[in-house]
Image (tube, rainbow, N blue to C red; front, side, top):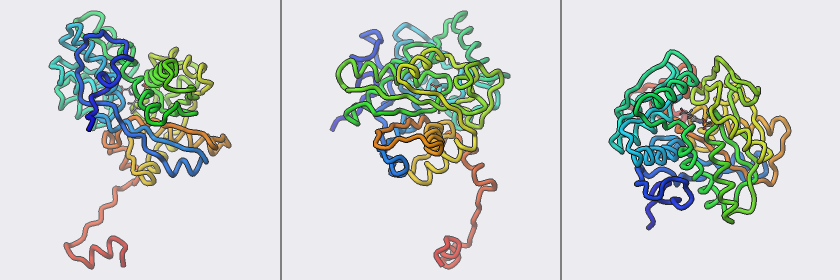
Length: 353
Ligand code: F0G
């Protein structure tokens, strides 16, 4: 049986990285496209979830990080740096550990999910909490890379997008063609830009007959792409996309326009309720930000938009276990049902009698 080799070895010929780059890999990519009966029923189309939480560190960031760390090591880097709302730092820390180089992460103080902070620390990162938001962290991270011998691996490093575009290849490989629509959350705007690169490249190589319409969703309190101007103090409970001035703004805007797509914003309640429904109806537990694409589809259907007969892919970007605190807030007080080790008591508590 074929063992998946990670996105560099699976797609090396299609990636713009030095030919002799040795892959630093944890087996990322090859994530499942899960058919959603629930959303297909609602739309009258075929809706698929690209479940990126099944990557090694639990988010899509691993696709770009295998590429960025491999190339950084190829170029002789001994340390790497990134700004992050959590997932990039978790991923960088893991790949840096694998490569034996030093990871330095800059995160907004108190504003990243506990699971992600744990990942960065456990993999041995120097974690620096910055009094400021992601955008401040990115400025610092660029500055450090400019003045000190550390490789910058945020998605402003084009090698990140080379790795991340492989998700589009996988979608086409699995469906046999590009979907009609591709929906996803958007924050710093690297991922949408990468998908567009991938879809264009695959179509040009004759692997697909069309390009999808891209629709990307922000949180209302952090929606610079929708407002058309930076947001100085971004706020949302979907902390992964709490970003006010996306670095890949121009690339994502170009992808949106070229694909005939759009940006839209959702309330935190819409995002969190989509997260809960997805978990209950489909068995797919994602972190809050990751549910923005699903929330976007539901909001558009409610507004009368039609996806009837269309093939739709929604990327769910990260695993729900990264942020159990926010997930459990859905319940208010976490239900605690405690019984004696007694069958009648258990049956009664389970509602079986
Ligand atoms: N979903 C999740 C779970 C994310 O962590 C991110 C970005 C996005 C969506 C948005 O993707 O930035 O490419 O538009 N997280 C970055 C980080 C910013 O630092 O982990 P994007």
